[in-house]
Image (cartoon, rainbow, N blue to C red; front, side, top):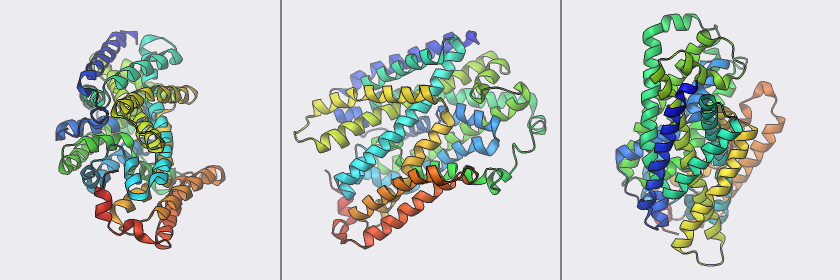
Length: 474
């Protein structure tokens, strides 16, 4: 497996060089650092959105879940992410791009006030630190496999590289490196899936699978994990509408129509790559037999059952997909901390120069926190679902209702965020394992009830003119 070391090292070096070069594009502007001056065309935004969806969770985590649990458990990740992009494109991309936002929590400020913005900021920061952790974990696993170094050493190396170019170029670094990294992933996974189908055929692959692997009972019965799998799909589909990294790319699009089309383009590639990863997980069941650690399924299969250069492309593809998502999420967390927490609650005026410094400096504690989580719980697929459970429970209802319901109020939003979040915490402890999934699906329902009740019971003076509110600048 060490034969793949140098291609992986070269790939990381190129990514670092591209990211460091984008320092020249920031030009000392915090707005350029955050949303690239709101000038990005369709193909760039669509590719960057795909790069955020196609990550270590949708590839490495997907393959391991497919191998160990079944097709629908693994495919739930790309299905949920694809659905999310379609939902964002249809309902949110146009209106939010039109508002000229810099961060997603800023919407909560304009619509509901700074307390709601603070709550949304805290929850999304926690959520995306977990997302970064899942992708740092995937990067570290690949580096460990090809280098022979320990997981901890590789985690430190990967985190440092991503942090350096994130701080250098901001969203420019994210988008430029995304364009390079995600096309490597697309080529690698499509070629790997095509090779497996051509050399083995779907018939022999499916015939060698245990009866439960493709069984629809994984979606239709409680015993088969149906409730849990549907919960994962729905959580990703709607919870990802609160994805800070997705929305930064939506905001960077040069027009609302560009943002919408880019979401649809990214949804297509997300499904293609996700299903390719699931196919590799199914092929690995008969090819490599039992594996002590399911996270090693894709590295083992790529290095022993694929031609060398296809295996390299898969390895590098997982690296690139994970690096792009970790980079984008790390960036937006630090920007939210700087703009929506520090600046909003500061008693002194924060200059643009100071804002740029804070946006860069706060990436360091973000990287450290994410790396620590990745070290103590290196489970890419599970980490993604856990992350979006957090915002699905409390923030999704205020987001959608805030865009489309003129009677939405601050009281309704605060009640919704607190009710959903607290309910998710309680459900974690009281829902029995055999009802796993209910703990994900119930809190957003309670959040919706609290939102509607809170809005109807309070004076709707803050929402007398929804359109004006949404278009106002802070």
